[in-house]
Length: 151
View 1: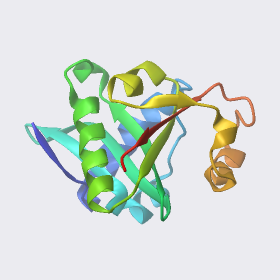
View 2: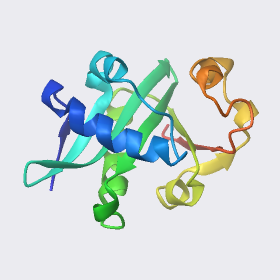
View 3: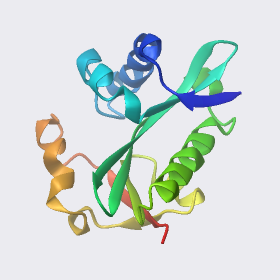
């Protein structure tokens, strides 16, 4: 298993993986253009030159970042790849001196196992909702908000 920052050549595999879950209504779809623009935020798990998991750490402000687009290939679920990516993002956040990281998720129990706690979505700053207003499920998407304090 290799965890690394994503490269431009990974975009098609990232797009396929994220949009697999988006088609199932489990996460937001991402356009290729958005992936290219934000490629520096993404990390991937690679096995035998195949992308099997992906996610991104998106910085919102001086004190807050979000784990986004966390997806694991269905054939590789429950092997620790999602957890490994979350740990990678938390280490990156600590290195950047970010005191808090959150996620909006349909899988709050997964994040709780990674040390996050559930909070009310309304407790997050309004800036968080910038992407949500474009979602077809807005405002009642059913996602849970989870956060971890790193400071």
